[in-house]
Image (tube, rainbow, N blue to C red; front, side, top):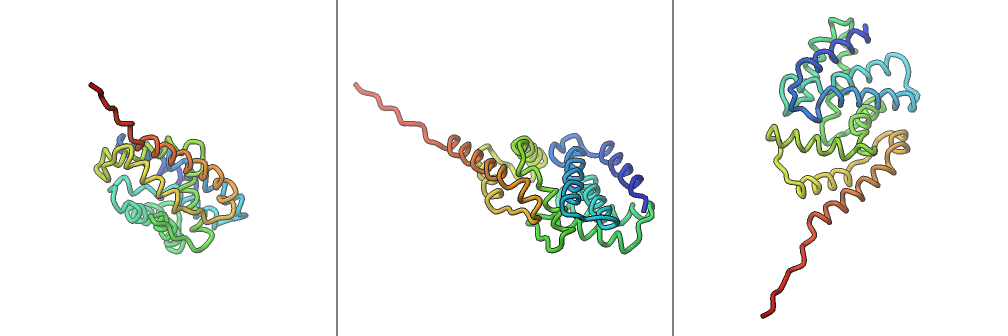
Length: 206
């Protein structure tokens, strides 16, 4: 496999062809997930071909956004299957990559370490300082493309439920991100409460 050429190709495709309205599922997100994947691969002690396949899956996991928004994971797997043979990937390697891409579909269900690393990398931001930036980028994107229209209160409520139900799979992600994810949940809950707090009623006297 020619990892470097496969990586350069998809980065160039995303840079040139993704719609500018994709404020969350943009090239920056793909590069961020790839960086998180590399970090977790190293911490989990994954080496060799397996590590490379996870990295390629990370780089191609949202490439389906070039084709469609809904069910973009399946479209991403299709693109990987179409393009990767040109870079020397075998049918067996491509099958693994496609399976890894598909486990990023929500709700995530990851059973082996390769799947767990990619899923944790995809949602790495939940336990970081830039959580709120990415969260509101996603809200803007959903509103713009009609995926789900939400006001501030509705969005905060969705995020509270998502953070409350989410768990990282790998030991490394739990060590790295759980504390900050808990802080983010507390902060967003506080924001929701403030936003929904009823203003005191005023009375007039005569």
